Amino acid sequence: MTNLDSGPLVGIPVRPWRRSARRAEVGGVCSGLARRLGVTERVVRFIWSASILVAGAGLVVYVLAWIFLPRSGENDSIAQRLRVHRRESKTVAAVSVTLTVILSLSPRASAGVKEVIWCCLISALGVGVALRHASTAERVRLADLSDHLPFLSAKRGWPALFGRVVPGVALLVIGLQLLAHVQGLWAGTVPVLIGTGVALVGGAVILAPWWLTTVRDLTDERRERIRAEERAVLAAHVHDSVLQTLTVIERAAADRPDILSLVREESRELRDWLFHPHQEEDGTSSTLSRLLRELQDSMESEYGCRIDVVTVGDLPSNPSVVALAQATRELTLNAARWSGASVIHIFSEVEESSVTVCVRDDGRGFDVTADVGDGLRHSVIHRVERLGGTVTMTSAPGEGTDVCLSVPR
Amino acid sequence: MTQPRVFLVDDHELVRFGIRSAIEDAVDIVGEADEVDAAIELILERVPDVVLLDVHIPHGGGRAILHAVRSATESVRFLALSVSDSPDDVISTVRAGARGYVTKSISGGELVDAIYRVQAGDAVFSPRLAGFVLDAFARTGEESLVPLDDDLDQLTTRERETLRLIARGYPYRDVAVSMGISVKTVESHVSSVLRKLQLSNRHQLSVWAADRDLR
Image (cartoon, rainbow over all chains, first blue to last red; front, side):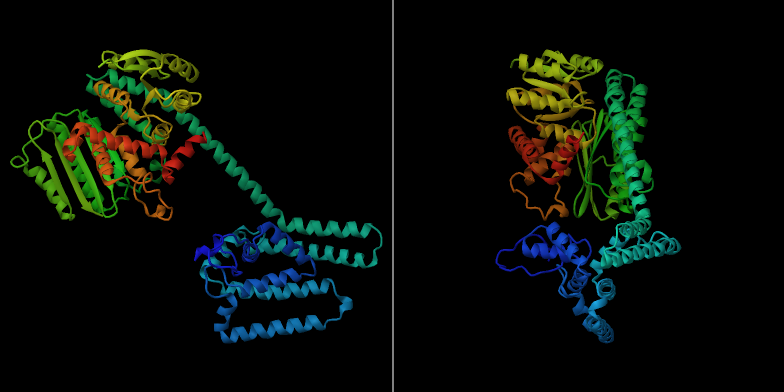
């Protein structure tokens, strides 16, 4: 489906003219044509914009193309979709035929501005049809577009819209009318200046809020960026000085468990703040890796042994994740109390269909065939089996202990 | 076996002191530096076997040293040392050419082991680095559209298994026993992972590296 948008296809000598879905500004007609002709979009858009100045003809052709060309990746054009609705399509046909007849019969003498107005009417009708029958995907895009349009944005209230747009459009039209009359007479520069001035003021009145919002957005963005940069500098400094020093202290205080646990707690908090700053902000949403880190925190400060946590992939918390974390806590507690090991390794891996957590120490170990106590059996094995998972326990006296818990996701 | 000649780069005197006292009995420390330019000059002058490199040196960081030295000579090997927990730092340093990465909380004996291993041309993966690599090479749905270079962008089942055991904190010797292979084979798996880590264009790796280049 998206192939039509992504360059020439082998075996298709003539690419169909379709409206572009991804590179569209409004309906995707221009970028679609650019792709069809193999030229840059800018050229097509420029020529098309220029053709609109010829009494609005380009506008009508654009809207017709919008309605009759299928969008890239879709089977039906808007016109084809409209045909399904019998009554509506008849109405649309009748109105457009009437408009065209009136336009073509109108005397050429008073042409000019008048034709522009007719073109606008026909286009407005076409745009209405296009909006009513566009596909859902295209409608989403158009809604997004309208949020960023100068004066259509739905975020600002209707009163403000009318208070600004109506006078603005009125000024614009009056200015253009003045210019049009002057053109016919070619009399002096003063009326030209007045006409241009009035039209410009009208344009400014319409566009001012949009321009102001853009400027404000830019300022906000810049402020946000400066804040982020300052934070990065501060983080780098803390990282390079305080954390390094804490590591040295940790090394030097090897025989002082109280200082050791204090230092570890401090450096862990700093690390969390430096490398996982968003976790504090979103508060409630817990994940497996976060639960394991909390487990590491409480165990290290309580038992003074080092706990090394490595997580691969992550998973938002759910009842089975919580149960898995509790079983892991029991295992770690066991290792910290009884194994005598200085380091306990916790490893978690989230795979497509299962989650595995392993707890390992190289402490004194035990005989798995004989020594599995009731505590371990209830708190770990039964808990994991209730989740439909498996427990693999490897240990022997003097060989360390390795327990792997695996549960389906 | 003669002691490996080791060069120490870290901008904190206390850290250098700590490392030196932990390893000086087992290795030959030929010099120290605390900033980028001096480090490059002294390393090129003394050509040590292994450089212990702090990733977070001011004015360009460890990667500036890596680039400068490695463009001049291939005979110096680097082992990165850091307190950082962020995958960006780890991955980008290893991609810049370090043969391994260990955290500063490593014990003296383990560090000496790692130095000997790097001197012998092997790769040193701490559990954390193994975890990061598993993460980076995880099979994810979003990347299935991008054609993957079979050799460089994927890990073999054996390599994945090796990394998993390392991430679980097993020393190489126990990894070998548990997989029923020799330590040499474990080392060759790890070296092959290192090669992929350095050469692969895998999306996540490139993103990690690119993010750091912006700084």
